[in-house]
Length: 163
Image (cartoon, rainbow, N blue to C red; front, side):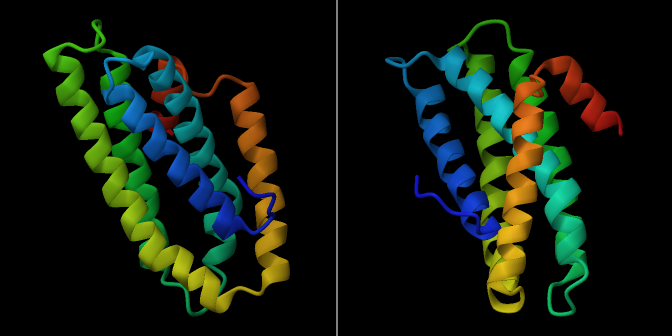
């Protein structure tokens, strides 16, 4: 990954990493449980950082649709619930695993597609690079704080869903 402070590029880098982790979670040749655990930490850290540092700031820009930002927050909840459902599957590779993984993939793919087409393109067009870099620094700081705290645990995901 390239070194950048642009919040748009940082979010996109996380999206591409999530796609790679999905491939590992599908592969019988990979450590699927480890990929799931890494994904859990990344998804929660990413979403919390977006919701606390990025989304509120983007709502202040007139040409970024507040409804899209709020819809993105709702989609985070759907993805978090799908993740929790997968984490509760007892046997990696079982039919239940495959079903819950597919639910998670669909929820996240839908969200990242919409976010990239609406919110991130809106940020590209309307937010000056200097502000995008400030948001990127705040995003990285919050994301790192969440990762350090082990944010992908089922108990923490339940707390996030309850808030």
